[in-house]
Structures are given as C-alpha cells and as structure tokens.
Length: 255
Image (cartoon, rainbow, N blue to C red; front, side, top):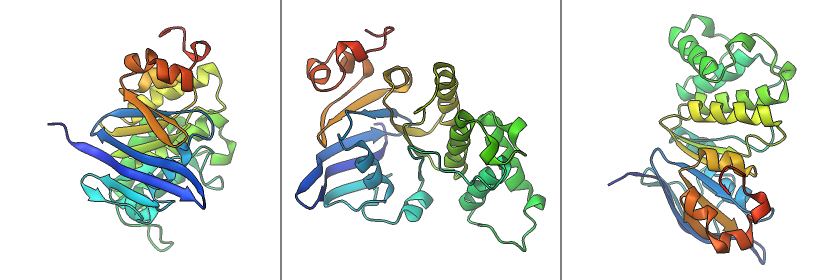
C-alpha cells in the first residue's frame, strides 16, 4: 500500500459569509507530483495557505505524514517536512545567491544564523549549499547579489531555497508565471530535477507545464474539487472542460 504524504479531510475555509474552500477531501501519495488547477478565484491560493499554515481551517483537517498540522504555525509545519514557494519571488535581494541558499540549509540543520559563528568553516553547510546550487543550475551565479539575477533565475533561486530546508513535501505556487516559453521549458526541467524523490504539489496556469509534470491533477472550482485523476482522464473529462479547460486551452501535444 502506497503511503500518503498529505491528506485533506472535509476541509473548509470561510471568510465571514463567503465560503472559499468547500469540504475538500484529497489524499496525495508519497512521491507523487500532484497539480491543482482551476479558474481565477477558485480558491487555489487559499488551499495552499491552509496546507502551509498561513490560514487556519474553519473546519476539517490537514494531515502531513499521519500527523495533523491544521492550525500549526508555518515554521512548525516546515520543520515537519513541508516547504512552500509563493506566486511572487520571495528571496533576500540584499544577499548573494549562495547566502540565500545557505540560510535555508542552516534552518534545516536547526542552526539558524548567528554573527559569531564562522559559517564558512562548517563543511556540512558548505557541501549541502553547493549541492543545491548545482542541482538548480546556479553555481556560476553563487556570488552574485540575488537582486541582479534575471527573473527566471530568481524563481530558480526561490525553488533552491524551498528545497534547501530538506522538506520532502514541496508546494510550488505558479513557479513559471511571467516566464517566456524557453524560460518555462528550463523551469520545468529544474522542477523535475530539484524535486526528484519528493512529493510535489503545484498550482500553475500553464497547462503545458501541468500536463508535462503531473502524475495526477485535481480541478478546483468555487472551492470544490470537481475531479481528481490522471492527466489523460482529466483531458477527456467533459465536466472539467466545461468548468475550466475548454478546447482552446489544451496544449496541442495532448489535445
């Protein structure tokens, strides 16, 4: 039996009279690459905020590796093995690329930053930092201030920081937003490489990215999951087409 990495059970979130997430139940298997898609306003970001601890559910539960994390602070959830990137780049622009990644590594090792500690002499930190920079194609940019990176490289750095914490469940929120076609192709390969062996949950509007990466897709409409299936079955689901995709939005390679 395949282990469940993340489980949502009867999850609800309301803001006053407005119900944004409506009784969502979903199991995501360990090692699965799972995409959540839906039209604007469907509740995707709210769902990510509930999973990562930014919001507390109105009712229902979020379970990570069998442990309920509903209502936990984001940093406590992170320490239990879940890490998240955001829709907009979330990096330390006044630090170098290497320093950004190193902060994530230090957090994973439970060390944190202290001005009196000679981080440069810590071989474990330096080795882990280099491995992540290499995995994300950023070794040649390690000494650059993060503010000088092109947009696509800033997004790559954010993914590097996300995996630097050592989490085995990774949430990526629209990682290719604003990228050109060539940048998107590079980002997809980076995501595939960087999250190898981990559980990936991704929100993304680019259907080409979704159908290229995902093992399974859940479709969220008005806070309700109307379908959860393989990409092939989602592509042929009439209810999904009517609610969201439409023939014109399907990538040519899968239409």
